[in-house]
Length: 326
Image (cartoon, rainbow, N blue to C red; front, side):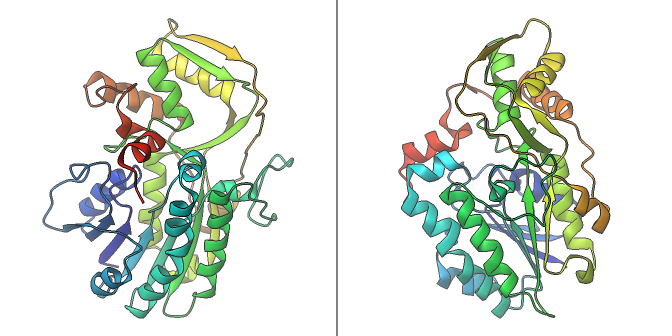
């Protein structure tokens, strides 16, 4: 595994993963629409950043040969963004997927790692939602994630290793920062408004620190294929309620932060077990939610997050509305 191809590599997770891979000595090729700007990625002799679309099959046929592994991060990445333009969401999240997998395999790629989502389970009553449970996705976004998992497993072979990860919600600082994810939203409001509004609060949300998430992708490149072939794993830290997360944010940012609770009709709880990935390959998330808040606080203090309440680039839905992506 020397040459790594990352779709969506100039997004939130990619902005932390790409520098990590370069530091480890990989040659990295990123394919991304670059809608968050082309300055997200570092300038590096071993990095090739291509502004392009994963739906462009001719482009894929040209640039995939010679790659050893694909990490597929590109997608319209949350329900509100998806609902904004369902046709666009389907074309990127589902229709483009099988051609990408097929062309990867035909081009000699040895390993394909897919970022699915823990939302594929829907809402379960069980306290620990594990990989053996039925998928009951509630939205088109999560339905397509589940369909892609199935498509990918059909391509598993001796020469083409497939692995699917179902991450919890990612949190923490990245150079292409998202401030529309639970921990990051609450931290932004605590720092810049001094007040957090919690809607409901009893809902559980699983999270994973961006450093752990990107460490896991690195690990999946390094492990022997027998360990990861055709595997599907949850990846998260602990499951906490929104109220607990708000309390953690307040602990880090300071007692001056006010927490206001409002009633909510949406009391959906998501909770996942990450026991299987620990048992199978020894992966355990090491960074806490407080670590994510501390990292964000440090970035705000250094002036790395200007206009964090108003700039569209931190909010996927707002940016998509602004640029009218199609």
